[in-house]
Structure formats: C-alpha cells, structure tokens
Image 1: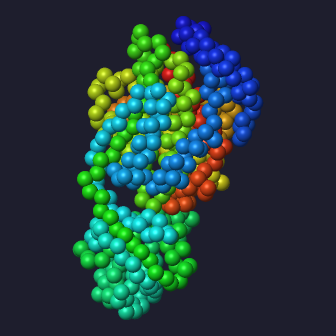
Image 2: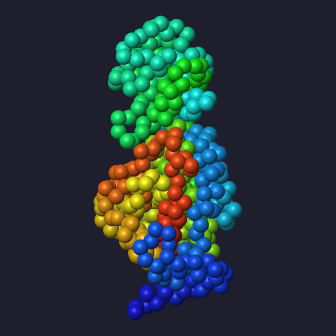
Length: 443
C-alpha cells in the first residue's frame, strides 16, 4: 500500500470513527442493504459519515419550499430571486462562505391564468395587460364571430395565419394549446408570430390545454407581463479544506435551481438543488484535503447561462484547482421506467467524477442500476468539460438510453406529488455524497 493510499485511508477512518461515535445507530443502519440495492454494502470507513447521515426526507423539506411554495422559478425574474434568497439563507446557516454571482439574461414574456397557472406570452402580442372574457375553441377551420371573446386553438398549424384570422373576427386574446401525439407532454411556450398584433397571444402547456378543453366554455382572465432588464444569479457556497497547509484543489457539487415557465420544477432541477443542500449539511464539518464548493446555477434553462458565466470568469489557476464537478440534474423522478442512474460525460469518457460515482455504486450495492459513462451534454457540466475539467451530469432516466425522460418533463406536472421518488433521491444522495467526499479526501 502506497503512502497516498495510507493517508487517504487514515483520513477516511478518522471521519468514519467520528461518525460512529456520534451516531452509532446511523452507522449500523449504513451497513444494512439499501432499498433497491442488489447486495449489502461493502463500505469504506470514509463512506460511513455520509451514508449514515444523508436523508432524502430532510432534502424534501427544502423541495417543498422551492417547488410547492415558490413554484416556477423563471431565470432573472422575482420568482428565481426568491429561490436565490432561500438558498443563500440556508447555506449561510450551515456556516459556508456564500457569494452570489450576478449576470444578465434575456427578457421574459409570461402570462398568468388564475385557476390554471403560468403560460408563455408572445413578445409579438400585447403585454402588460389583463383580459377577462369567455373563451371559444376554434375547431376544424370554422371561424365564428369572436367579438369580445378569447380564441382557443388546439394544435393549430404552424404559422401565424390562424392568430391573425381570429383577431380579424374580433378576438380580444388568442390561446394556443398543444396536445402531443406521443407520450411526452407539451410544455408552456411563447408563440412566435410574423408581425406584432394588438391582443395577447399565449402558449399553454398540455395539461392546461386539456383542462380548458374539458371545461367546454367559461370565462378566463389572462394577464401578460414583459420582464425586461433581468439579472440572474449563481449561488456559490464554499468551505476550505481542513488541512490548509497545502492547496489540494476543489471538489464541486452543483445543480441548477431555475425552471421553465409553467413548471414547478420539482425534479428539474429542484431535486438536484436540494441534493446539494443536504450534502452541504452532511459534509460541512467532515475533514478533507480539498475544499468543498457547492454551486447552484441560475438560468440553466435558457442555455446553461449561469454555469457558462461562472466558467468564463475563472482564471487559469482556478481552473487547474477544480478536480471534479458533480452536476446533478433530475435526480429523483418517480417515473416507473426511469430505473437507470446515468453517468453522463460530454464525450462519453470516464473521468474522476464518473469513476468515483461508479465505485461508490459498487460499494453501496447499486452497481446494476448505474449505467455509463455515455456521451451527453445538455446540462451544466458542459462548460467545465470545454475547459478541460473533470465533470459529468448524473440523472435518473430510462433503461433504453439517457434521452428517455419522464413524459411530464418541463411541464406543470413536474411536482413533488407527481414526479418525486424519495428512494431515488436517497440513492442519488448516497452516490454523490460518497463519491464527492472520497475525492475531497484525496491528496
């Protein structure tokens, strides 16, 4: 056994013994076979202080605030700022060094329909107005007199002709709804038109489209809002290494905390966000040779804007310090076919993060559920990979491939009730916690 291995094992053993002394019942439970595991765990001593203490139900309390209380967290708007403030408060209470990193983001165009929820508004339509009127579904190309009414289209052909035709017939607003022909449900959207119009035009998610169609008729209130000059924020929380006489670098655990319009974002990515909060709680006092940094990204849904801004500000020497970035995006879905835990690196190659999680899965007995690494971008690990840092995204998806997402992805049904599995969240916590801590303990 080399000196490096001895040092690592000594550090891990010290942490494990401390955990056993502080919580013998938890340490004993950590040795039992995990729910969903194929075999009993074979833990290193350094795994004990993490596995014995992480709790999905504790993380769920944070998710209730983000998804149920705040709801959709649209990048740069007041809803995302409320989530930012909550994250800052919680991380400061854990005694982390917390900073916020502002960056500008594009304008948002949103609509609110009391009794239904949030939708997207067209920037080509009337904004900053409220319309209250009965709605009429326009079907089979039949265009009745719409004077004083809201025109409601379902799966209208692409283009703007139907919108203009409805307005010419007197419509005071136009709703465009989509019902997907596949299992995947449609999300809210901001319609694009070929020219400006004088009434609100909104894009409705499938679940709200179906509710509106089922109601048959009635009165609706639509309020459209233009959100200009927006600033989004990354939330960065760090604690230094406990052996500071030598800089051994940084381990990062990350997620994005914004969501798409209309979606409470319980799984995408409230789940990854609360995983970070729970691991920040568990790891805050454990000894490490590397600093621990938790990063919660704003405005991921608009094109990885938060993580790209963060990486663009890193000096060369700081890039060299980052030894692994564990990005957690959609880590708790309850969708039945999503039984595979995917290791997703941009190029499909192994690196310190994917190897660490796979090794943790073997120790914990989860290895049959873990797939990869395979090549996939589309999350906040991408900017780090582009600068040569070890990084990957970790996510529950279908066995057939990492593109198999739950059908209610990006929809108003991405709620705790409809789309969160505490068991899968617990597995994610244990895997990332054990892997990140082990990497942080290495010199």
